[in-house]
Image 1 (cartoon, rainbow, N blue to C red):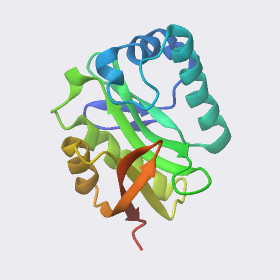
Image 2: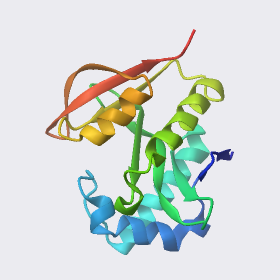
Image 3: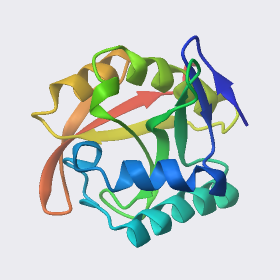
Amino acid sequence: MLLKSKRLLIRPFTRDDETAAIALFTDPDFMAGSLDGLLSPAGARAKLQSLIDLYQTHSFSKLALVERNNQRLIGYCGFGLEPIEGPPVPEFGYRLHPDAHGRGLATEAAQLIVADAFKRLDMPYIRAIVEAENSPSRRVLEKLGMIYQRQVNFHDREWLLYRLERPG
């Protein structure tokens, strides 16, 4: 599975991503605000393996975002399984290295992944949670057409729940 945009290649993570993924997952700027916190190299390897395993099991995961012009891994976008108000369900999310912020890359990736989720994965809807103060991420979700639903408590923090129905 490979999605291409003008500036990005979007694909499942592989073991070949280990060096670049460890660099990201151990970077305090990249992991700022993450529920995982800053990972050790061993924790980063485990996170990479969990992303690979999730894709192999469910045909979705957080996918690698690679800049086409330089082949640099700049983050991820896609779905994890999260127990938001009940059993684990697919939850949409993304994280980009700060030097990739402000260029529209999150929106570019998210649009392709949402379209793929509705078409290839036949998801009936997409859910995402975001912290209220994270206005850049809220704008990305709103550009996708996601609608704010309500506040939810997740890992002892308040989040805003957004939802997008599959076009009918």
